[in-house]
Length: 427
Image 1 (tube, rainbow, N blue to C red):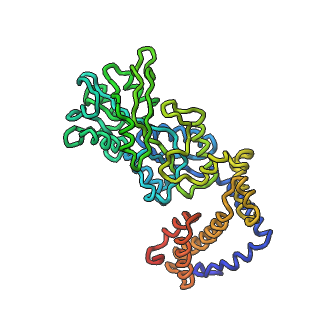
Image 2: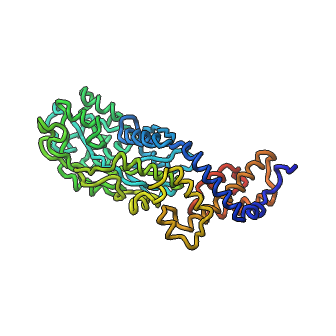
Image 3: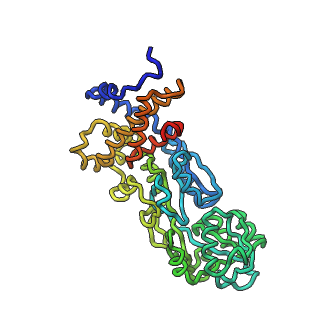
């Protein structure tokens, strides 16, 4: 009987599968795995607090994806600035998130964008009883609800109000969440509330419809947007006259305000088949309409702070790939994996691109990654059973570490497996 300490013979394994029957067998096995196992994937979406735009959008995505056979779990986070961090973290278990904040793309190498889905305007509501308010500078010394620290709304509020000399040192900033801000403003517990929400959100219309609550007209919106534009994507949008109440004409005139782009972000190594589902969910939820305030149709590639995912780039340029357009998604994904193993990559590059399959170099890199995964999983079993690796396995593990560090694509899963080894073995 072979002991678990026995070295995994990669060369023999490759010789065993090198023939056409072996390749065909692997291709069919992978295809069957795709058809049977693909729907069981659980997609995790990181969202902000309940009733906020990120959360309501995630609920809409969840409904669409579940109708396609996926399991979808939402993970609420109060500090919305960290959504991109958990997406970027390899072991977080989070697949999808949102950003509407200052972002340095170099800090998020494992994250890619799927597109901009809307712009969230800066909305400052105040109580008419405090007197005429014509500028954010008039809020100095008052009680302002501006969300908890760590939220995108708080970040925007502090940045914008600071330009007008309104700071936490001279003004009381209440760290109320979205719903608490609305309740406190209506109850008179605060003088003003700072929101960063699309104008069709229920919390916005609630405040706009409340007697004694007014929306501040930011008269220098273009200048504000330009001054806040570093590491942000901002536009000037218009809240049309009568938008909230046509009969009573609320607001009384067109009102301009800066608005910040909302981008959907995903893990860089996410399965292409799942990505096509998510892109279709975005089209279902946001497509078919244009925002009259900005003149843009969504989802859009314009304004993404994180580099666009190559699958999304292909989708926006050419639409849904041939395979996914005319076949059920599970079957299309199965055929995708068959192409991965059996097509002569050196001569069918253009055909693969037409069919929605990535460039030939991706296949070679993916195959290498799969072989490394087989080796490392065997080593982990040996390590679990015996507590040590053979010198030959140690040398091979170090070589895999070097190769993974050099390769830029298709190695996210390899890095995840390497993370399971003791640091003393891989350093």
